[in-house]
Picture 1 (cartoon, rainbow, N blue to C red):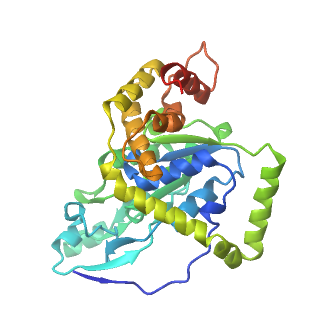
Picture 2 (picture 1 turned 120 degrees about the vertical axis):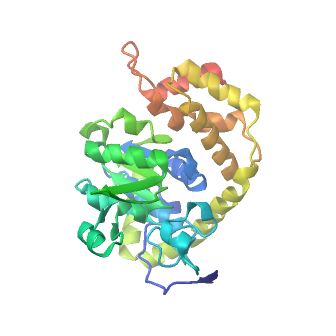
Length: 348
């Protein structure tokens, strides 16, 4: 198996992740998803113009490139032979290339064929080959699938995404012919809650849910405008001025990924997570699982080898706020309810 680099393409300059002012909860959630995709993705709800899309694209530009098999439409991972697509498994010779982590936008008006991919039935019947045109799910494999205004997504696409997210595989069937390929991605959704609520089935699939708000203090608003204007005036110079901070964050992500398998979750932390979910009345055990995974990834980002109660406290609100049942007798926002439970169950 040989490794080579594809021809270099001019990189499109993206606003640096490290230069984004505030929105600490959103930035931390995205870093956790970058360290451990198993947390289940991130949902970002908040006002328009608060940097939701900018932050997602900035993270993608920050991530170190990944190794993939050359010519594969799904960017199969050569280090995981059990997850290779049919073409890569049957190939007699594989060439490994280094490619950027994909970030794929799923537009609201996308057809099902564009999302899942399309089969050329006529060619399949005439030539006896599975002529498959990969879709957005194929492009997003091992990367990020980003849906802006996810709360406005059509129901049939929501159902489709739920199936693929649960199985890690996309299956396209037409006229008795089927094609399947790996489709494991970090799902990132953003939207404005004033424009409609997200279906509970999809909400529950997101590991973390964060809220972003327009800054209320004058110095922060001024700094946001100054940095954005500097970027638009001279993108190359602005990106260069933040290169050291970006490199440091990139090293932090890589170090956390290496440390993650070694991070221990003691019984004390598991018991605390379970007691917190019991106090909040969350359905099922997904809350505990998400708390455990996100706390472990947070510990790895901090360079710690064991999850502590402090890690649980720091990540509890984004891990649990979207899993609470509606309480007609309690009009508090979900984040406030989690804070109250934290004060009772895990006082600092």
